[in-house]
Length: 218
Image (tube, rainbow, N blue to C red; front, side, top):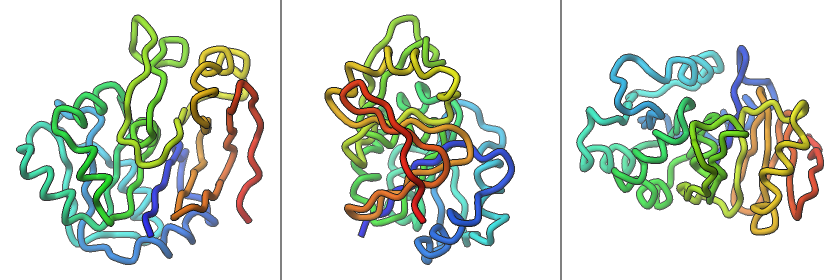
């Protein structure tokens, strides 16, 4: 059963209820493949995301960072053998360009690994997303961008939604008639396991131009 985690951004640590299901889902801990969102930056990245997992006792035998320093074929091999694939937070546009250039979408979708994404990574895991300057993205004009497409919905992650509800609705209303959009803030997660979707923290759903807050999974 395939398992996907769409994470916001955690201020300090992963909440206890989310920690419990992560520990249950991530039983194979041989290798983690972390996909950079700033692939042309070669210094240490992914430190925050790794710390979140370290602090709840989820550690791996091997850690691999996939960026432009890694050859395309090697990147595919690392994804194929990974126990967990983690799309890191940062710049969603640069990460998307890298995913497409390296043709990583299909290997990620075919993998039996647990797939996780934080902020930018969660956005790029989704089917498509609106790249709009009004939503904080680096773009002169708005455009719909194809994501990896692990699940048939869109994600707006790590955004100050509560203080910008009208703006978010006006921007995302057209897409909300095409597919469901999950919008989240910090310290939250959407977990998709098979056909079941679980909610942790403050997550909203936008559908047919209507927005509502989702109940948390107990």
